[in-house]
Amino acid sequence: MTYQYTDKQLNTLNQGKNVYSVNAKYAEDNNKALVTAYPNPNPAPDDLEEINTLTVGDQQFQVIATESDPETGSDGMAVAPIVNGVPDYSSVAVIAAGTDPESEVNRPPLGFVSRDVASAIEARQGYLSPQYPVLDKFIQENPNVFLV
Image (cartoon, rainbow, N blue to C red):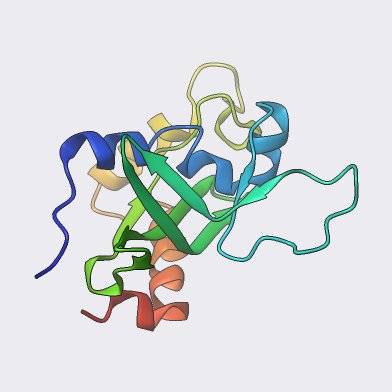
């Protein structure tokens, strides 16, 4: 039987302290731990704290892959619920963040149209979001994450 995520869990995982924190600049600017699949086992004293488990309510999730692309502002991660003390890889969820409106990437180049607005207009014209290639690459580089 596969794990059933609640709407609250998915919404919480898709918030700043979680999915946006796969971006080192966001984590540092917001005094959050860096979310990563592979925390540094020997961090220097001035390094960001790194974590690879997230908790929503009583449920823990193991971060098994992350992606952060500063050029497009795409941040995402794949998580597996921890069930009976071990990650349930048959129930992986992929969490993709919306663009952080405070990021440098999303600031309006001319002061009136943000990158999000420009991307929405472009996507409406029949093109893909600039985040699509980053997410597609994430899926291609992590094929085992998506096997169920």
